[in-house]
Image 1 (tube, helix red, strand yellow):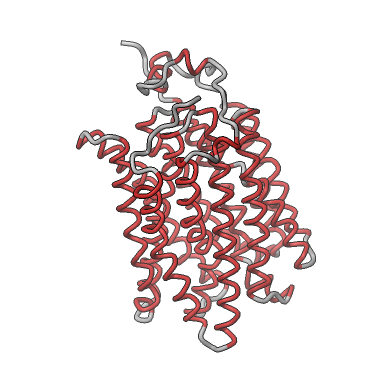
Image 2: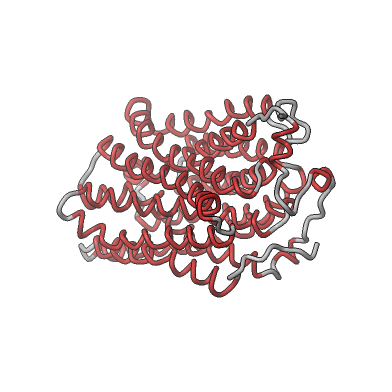
Length: 434
């Protein structure tokens, strides 16, 4: 029997840490929102505009960066993206105006856009289809770990050393990751730590073989990708669901402060609990479809669709979080944590639908298109949140604004599931006409 290495999981861990850094850097501003609002006299709409600047740049960056990563490869694409977003994260410390924050936020958005196209491409190159959702769930858990670390360390750094140092310290972490990336990463076929048995396992999909992977697989032109229903299924799903996650990421601390009067480091533990719960959802979300395939003998299509339907149902609970929270804050925290967990389970699978339906050479481009559309969905949610919160705060009814926003957050996934799997790609047919 040939020796079987498992180096692909080491690669998965590298992607996990990159995603952790990605979310650590982007969440700092939400935790410093009360401090920055006082220092720069921001309204809710000002803050929403800064968030929207990040999201617009992220969306536009997604459109082009996926194709760039397809051309230059995962190794350099990931490295360049992470290097640049680390610089942009540090530059927040030197912003002195609201416009300046918007500018550096846009720089962070366009550079951070490289993370998910690169990460999904790495997973497609290193894992067979049956393992991709689990690998995606594991690395996607980094979004939650980053969101957990941030509230535990950022308020403390800001109180102890000033808000500028919070941006500098978190941004500098990315340079450490780059050292390990260049030391440890190469393609599976070239990597000295990958055995023949593991390489055969990586290339074990029925429609793939090593000979195909050694060739320069033709990438589908970007304009042609837009003609496929498979592309639009992914894009529609991202449009409806991304805004929910961004809302939690950028407004959860503000919601807890407004509803329960938390101050300073009091916000750290409730926010951390939400994202710890979300981390479990990310891993479980990748494991469940694999369990359906192995234990019940289901096809990957049936397993993926059923799993995503289950994940789409759980966010409905968030519509009742405020009522539950009126009895005890922790009821609201747990319910929001369940919704965040369901989102991460959904996210682990919606990303994997791309590698289920598209050749590896075009995965980055499709992820980029869907990410761009998802970014515009997030911008719509951010702008709506800012307008609603300003309007209802003036009336002394800010809880009404949050109720409207939670109503959308609760129903978005079922709508997305219906459009994806009942209207656009009921059979999730792979692209064949290369």
